[in-house]
Image 1: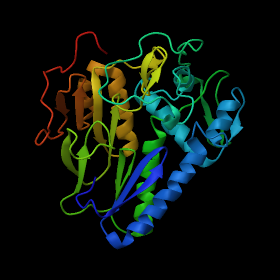
Image 2 (image 1 turned 120 degrees about the vertical axis):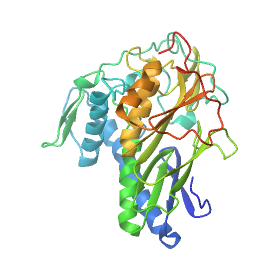
Image 3 (image 1 turned 180 degrees about the vertical axis):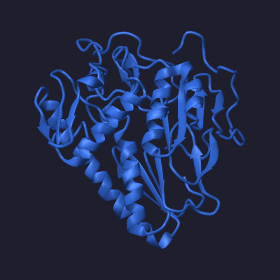
Image 4 (image 1 turned 30 degrees about the vertical axis):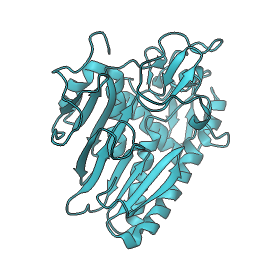
Length: 334
């Protein structure tokens, strides 16, 4: 992750791995402590799998306004902002759809599928649990002044598309303030930078899966500011009785999205904005390339055939994947 791979700390976070590194190695423990504190706060507020989380309280009280802390108010507001910016392509009301697909517990407890995607669930969910229609983000009511959140009956929120990235932004800011030096924080591949970067920038390896080693096909890039997020249908896949499913939901169908892209990485001013764009790009499929270009968000899009295209200034030098066609997608895909 860093140009100095020995000067980093790895932590458990949100069922994945957090990586923390700092420009001053002597302050790395302080930075990691700040990150750990932010991760714990977000987990208690935003986890769909903790029965004692504030989000679980909101989902269990559908139809009633629930008083919650400011962090969940911010996280749900960020998710609704993502829905507005993407015209609903990134929708936090996909919780019931994910449950219908079997993602109703910690990911480690699912029948995980590894290897190349082949793919995806195209039809009903598990027997007795058909795919759930997505009710839509406009049904969610947030009252910032009262500190309450209300969802309609039958709606469950899932903040997976935004909360981890927002946590990365918070964690990087907290680590920078605590350590008083430049820091880079990656939460399961959602990466945020705060404070001055090294002279050569932060050296980052971009692949389908943040857990992959440097031998996995990918690209080294250097970052100085902002955030980087990668969304991929090649990871977080599990087996159901009806086939293989993954965690990126198409709100239009309630099923795992069948995208032209296997993986999309985006750089933006914040990790949150980068992750909103990368997730929406997977959902938008072949339309995503022009959309990201119009937004001037440097992006790397890997098509389902393993070819790659670079958008809005993302460097092509050093990419180990072959460059795709002008469109880089299969006819008929989103």
